[in-house]
Amino acid sequence: MYEKSIFTQIIESPLPEERKQLLSSVFKGEQLADLCRDVIAKHVFSPDLHPERMDFILQHTMNKPDIGVRSSATNEVYLQNIYSKKTITDLPAWLRDHRLADLEIQVDPQEFIFTRVDIYASNMLLLQYSVESGQLKSDLDFTNVPGVIIIVLMKESPKVFKEYDSNRYIHRFTKAHSDSGLELPSLKQMVFVQLDKALELYKSQDYNEDEDVELLELFALIADINCDKVTEGSANNRFLNDIREDVYRFTQSKEVQQMIFAEDIARMDYYSSINAARREAAAEGLAEGLAEGLAKGHASIISLNKWLMAQGRIDDIKRYTEDPAYLDTLLEEHSKKE
Image (cartoon, rainbow, N blue to C red):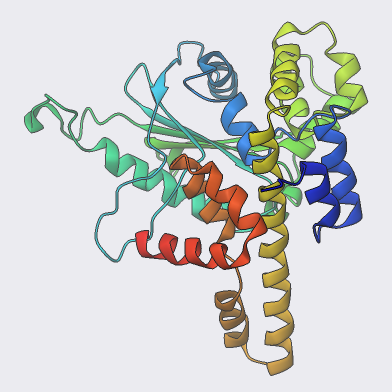
């Protein structure tokens, strides 16, 4: 059976023209793929393939030079009961000190980002309150539960962060504070990074003398890997150049190109469904119309892609981009697993 080239698939796809040109440019090697893309980020910052990269982010972001990655961890937190919703993290890892860490990369602004991450951290913490294989339950109590760390890289800052009057682009939530002024340590350490603000700061060079320029440079690269200012400014940075070369080599794979293409199609379908739902809700004048429209659409496609990739079912992603009926089959299968 004749297999269409990725470029033919792009041309014939319903993607916006600007997106088609960008994909073609990336696959031809004229530009580098966005580091915030799911498939790219999970390769470049893999705790197993490149632990030194996650080490760098954790150590510099948390200001803790002794943090080190031991191995990757499952990205699906166990369900507490049959009524629990499943949470799937991006880049989880076990640390050498037995804490559980996760690197989340958020492309679109989410006003509920703190709530989502708080739930993720809580679920991860519950996982920590359980013994490892060969360990006695009596070995674990409330005094020695390993904590969790979640670092969220936000490509576009949500409104709550944009409106916060501060020149800081890293926001660390590492302690609990009472209204009486009492401060207590927290087992959940959550850090939010405004990548767009980091890029703006790097380009303007308007930062303090104590700024961690190496970290700022990495965040600027993640925000926009094709930014000329970042490329020029970090030309002699071997660490960042290795990442660039890695992205280039990785995206020359036909399999990876199909995954990137599928991700773009999925995002287009997702937002088309949302917009259609909003129009339907507005026409009906009912709040329920939005929920109903979303349910009818393919709002779960991005979740489906993550699930399929975690299962190693790359061929299924390729197949459904050309076979809409097969997409429905996969969505039904995915819904039964949740």
